[in-house]
Length: 371
Picture 1 (cartoon, rainbow, N blue to C red):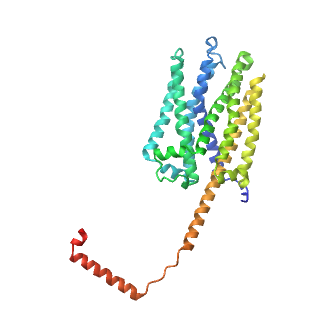
Picture 2: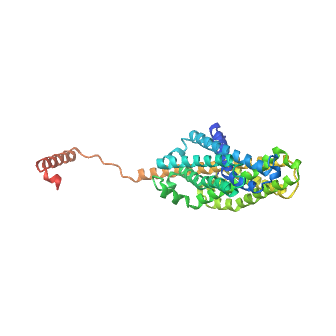
Picture 3: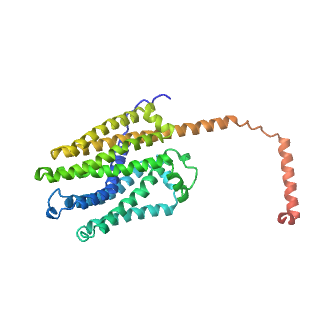
């Protein structure tokens, strides 16, 4: 198929891209942040509890930003839903039972409560680390288990309503759809991205505290966060291949050149990902300044923005192909139907006479209705 010529994006489309990218980053922090809090709590240093850049200080900062990320993610998701209410997403959500929507809202509030309790009990549960860690793990697992697969399914249905055969997406139908390879790949990709984003956020927090200039031992903490981000980001490469391989032909074609905007964004994001891995490796094995700890954060935001452009491009391509196939099938059906022949006056009179006789027999014999 021929490539789609890039066109100038409208203000509404640009706003949609920015909202989706910010929403994904916020939910990454909310989902992966608690897991990095557990790691930071395990590196607790009693003699440096109140020191800027210490594991204890960074852990509380990460917990605080996880709460903000979850609240911001919900707000940004609602704004994007209102903005794209004509793009099929609202129709996909309407296929969910009402109780499923209530359940999703309660799950979000549950995670907010867990994160708030985790931060509030930071000092009270200092000597009960396993109990304290279980609260963070509960919040993170709750978000990662429910929402990435659910939102991936809704995104697929919004782009192609026929992707899900069930008219009502109840629990059995959702579980069946969530087991599809492309949904599992998207969920795995989001989970790994959440850990990487949270680890890179720690590097950014440390750059603001100036911890690397205060003490050499703080550099080991930066190296640890960099190693986590590096390993998880490297795992994204095979997961990304799995994700691309599981795409339908429309999505794969959009990335391979049918949609030049999506293809260019995807290729640029891959090149920047290699640069990000190089930056993380430099931090993990070398001595860097505080300002250099910010570099992965800027690269990450650009990568997420470009990946969002490619994601929207693939879904738009799927929507266009679905609309074209529907129009083609409707045209073929109309052409295959024989033209209706007008009935003659005598035939119409005969049919009316037979109808009146049948009605009169029915009125004279009520038992016929019973039989």
